Length: 291
Image (cartoon, rainbow, N blue to C red):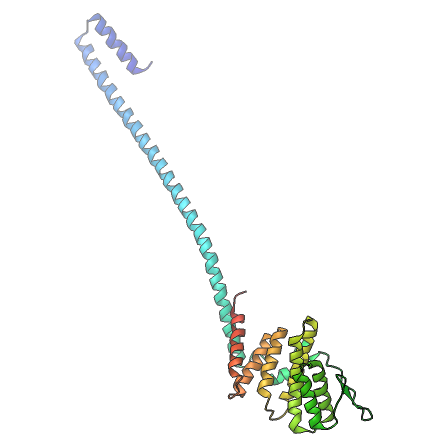
């Protein structure tokens, strides 16, 4: 039986009989004091237990909040890391572009103009050239339904008129025949070679069929090379610029860059230098742009 209940029963009996000895009274007080002490101890224990449990709950709640905060931080950090990673990738690409340009400047990466002329990209060097006009001395050659003059100057003027009339295919044939018939006419050969190339270039620009345009640009490049091979040509700057443009149209950006740079370095007084610099700037920007 619970001790407190026994004491209460004893107290009740003593009261009911109204007869209590001195010794019994002392014992009763002792038991009451003991009960108070035990009750106080129990209350202290309960209070301590509550405090400990409350502290534990508080700690757990705090830890949960910390974990939630950490999770949020990690999520944000992950997002920030993604943004930072993109920035790093972009910076690396920019640095790579600068390294490539530096290598190009010291001649470690890109071939010179001469080597490209000697061995242009396969897609260009293997381009089929236009069939040569048959040069039979016994027959009068005809182009665009017209007889081709036999004299050099008249032949040149005839071909140039075809070009001016925007008959670029016929003009290319006429200038090609001129180069076959009048190769010794040094005063006109350089111009004839240039206008032949211009005819192909204009033919490419005016065309709508992709394959035909590409073929014309390739033929233009090969024809402009003829101009560059002519000693002291007055049209070298124009040929360099147009080769660069043609390579761009064909997707050969690195080759195009070489010819623009050649124009800038070798023809300081050329009116085409601003245009060449503009094309270089555009190519460099496209190369540095993150993909």
